[in-house]
Length: 615
Image (cartoon, rainbow, N blue to C red):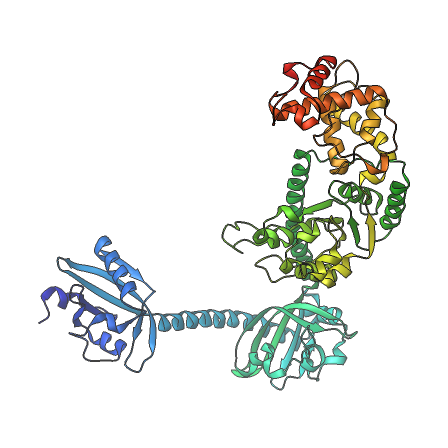
């Protein structure tokens, strides 16, 4: 039985059902609901089986109705016996809350959209009637010989009859198209000015909105198409085509058009400029961040210092490489000055006004390498909150330095080769390639040939990078450079520390020259800076690392008595530091030095070594 409340609520102009939410049963339904669901057995049927996608969405909707008293949704569809689904809007209202009883009213969205399209068509037709009135006036003026009115119009206007033949063309249309009225009147104007799309595809007359105007009595407003001039050049146009009637009989159509070529070109330029500005802004932001990192790390790009033949060979090779745009491979031990040579190459090249972007391949985690090198777009991976150009994009117009290139993962080696060969990069998560113009410097302290042979480096990338090689010799092979390098580094350190430059004695130079420098220039710079900090009484005090390795190249250097005394004293201090001051015994300093304890005590006294001289 239908209650009085249910009977009242079912009197609606839309399909309506009453559902007991506790039992999931339809308790009543009006006739429109039976038609909408295409079934007469709605009362008593489980409601959840009549909607899709399913029970979870229905439960959420029911809870919202129970909480708010009323709600609506478009996330559910009606399932019909033939297996089809009908999209709908469901408006729900709670009739009772304990137990929950719902009144559900259904709106057929397909029918609603049809009505909306019909309304739009009616609006177009009404607009078409207004345009028709204007066109009718044009034809009346033409019949009265008032062609001047049409010719005075700033927009192009032409008419066609029911056979598609041109009936008139005003002066503005002739000026824009380059065709005269004699060229066009009586001829098929579509075949003359509207035969192809801008991309060159044929434009069948059956697809032309202008011909549909008088064949189907429709008004068409087109915002971007192409008419073809007599000289074969296209012009971008927007136009309105309106059917024309003669005493109630369809006579043809009138077309009013405007040349929008300049506007479209400006729009395209503006869009390109905006995209370029956006890319440039991103690049400048990242370049600034990169440069700030470089400044923060106090990375000094000093001029190359040295007078040795080995250094001269490097400089000569560098000058050749700087004039070319070919890839350069820098080889040499760690700390031998490869970054310095890369910086000098950048300064000497035509690309010096654009940045030198360094990628320390060994310092980047493998899973972050692709985004770091090639960039990312927002949403490319978890944590990618914005678009970000990679190091290759930042190096556009400049130089990319791949430091420790042997540490580049194999997957990124393949991507890097593709980017260098095609001169394009595609950001992570993107599909649009971006053009880049970069010169490449790669550096390594390993043999890439060995890496290739052992399968850790791609042979094709090795061949691409190994066009011009510059080997940076270790410091032990060019002892002549140690003195000028030490002086140069000392000046830089003192300037940074705000201290006067101390004197460097010949004995100190001999000590520096006699050391093998396994850490090369980087180690020398550290020793010099430490000496600048510890120097006293105007002389540079140099403390060479424990376990001094003589420089085989400088083995013939003659040391003075003072140098030998200083070396012996320093050696004893280091030994006492190791033994904690213990002189005798199996673990004592005398045993390690190979001398008697009494001899060691005598030398400690002779050299003035005090308890505070060792740790």
